Length: 262
Image (cartoon, rainbow, N blue to C red):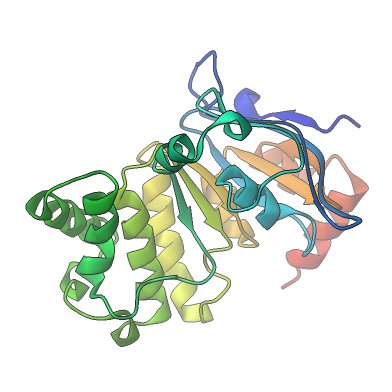
């Protein structure tokens, strides 16, 4: 089976000659272990791609390589047509502003208020004035439905509220792409829904999203493409209806039997 997946064929992809995200035969090794083993993937503007698979399959490594938090060892990654390995440090920092990242842990600065967490990046990186950054931050706190938390510190918030702040912080950079690395895995069950609701609303705005998650209900509702990984490879990719009703691989069928049982 080929490991080249072009997600442009599924769902609500926009027509563009250049994929917003392109990976070609990407390899990431940790010693003798191949976390990514020749992965190829295309995502076009406006697509919503959910990456799923068992633990250790390479999902989070794929996301981290897209944002260059991990450097890939071979192959090529292009964001908006630009090869990341060929960029200078300054150019890479600039292109990272187009790629928002939401982590499992919230990574908020504990000594800053919610509003200060949100305004720091736009003021330092995008050179917005304090007034402009404040206005933008409050708009995105409204978007994630916690405007009243602006002056609190992260420790005063629930886990779900902190993750919504983290999403708003990424949005304040007004990225072209939002990457999510299992954003609900650190949350108590009752807090998961509030974060997923925000993500569903974001998907409806048309922003390009790549989401690593085990939340299959969310995947079925929001994704236009499901990418299933195992052993550092993309095993299959399809629209949600096909993936959930008739997975193409035996490994995909086995994964769904186990995960949908819970």
